[in-house]
Length: 426
Image (cartoon, rainbow, N blue to C red; front, side, top):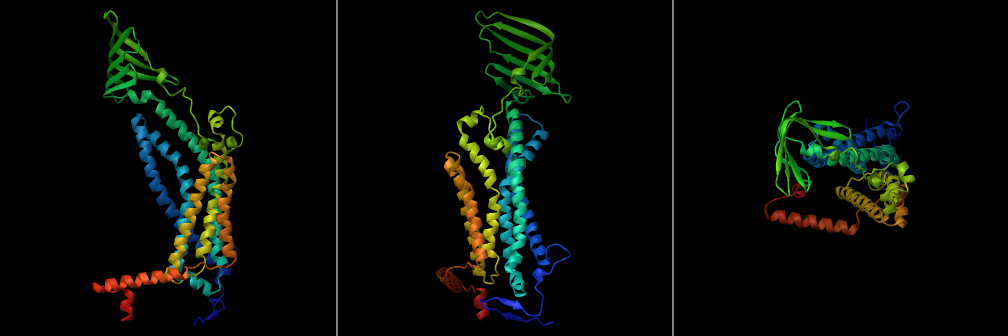
């Protein structure tokens, strides 16, 4: 079958021999063409999000690994810490992954001449925009859920575990090999830790009392942990007591001796939660006795409004991408210009948002701008898209780029290297 394409005013073309595929629906769902675009965006987003989260998760793993190994914790604690860090990473990466996925998809559709063909057969810009907007709304809802529910809960749990790990000195010092200083004047050494958890070759030096010095030597022992109480039970050993002023000493042999380590457990620590660790409900009505809130109430307000406004950047990114890349662009320079402008505009927009957040943490007057910045990006994209404005590379930039390409080709020709264009002309 022969397909004829006629030219329309404004440089648009239309296929005369085929149906507008953008309006052909499959069953009662989304049109086939829109499903195709949505599928490509979804796949690109999943791959981008997985790659970025994987890289950042590895950096998080290395940081938490240092905390866990230095404190003598188990691999299970390490696994829990890394899992709890995931929502924070995804929350930050998801809008960026969405932006990259949409840019990649629309650029690929243009490079493969799929957007020009869609336009030729009667598909409007709305056909391209609708699946992007639908996916942006889904990511917006997911990002809002992360900001208000998942991330605060995970950050609070993460801070709770990390604080207890760092405060649990027993897990640090009660290990085999080396002399471990618990605090000033108290040192513990364990020669060997048996598979059943018991200890062999125990030495404890207690110099905390200015009047007397206590040295404990025991053949075996075991650590008994009962909630907020912990004891090092030593068996078959000797207690050497030395009076410091006189230098007199005495030796007491014992079958069993319980050395109290309760003050070094993590049971009674008071965890200091930051504003980012608090739930949204708490931020709406902070405790007046919260010391951090008393010192910096602006931070709590900034955190609350940041959670409200941050998901809007997903919609802003979608609007900006559609403003630049929803139209067919058959010229390679024109496509490159669109991609560069999308990246630059979105980076400036998000950087401005981070700057406003930093200012809002110290000055409440900046809080409205947390919403105005992403809304400005959304308004810009809608205005360009609704007005059917074609944003193109300025003429002087095209001239400069052409001259640069010509100069490079001349330099390559002097060395006997010919470009593809020169070979084609020949």
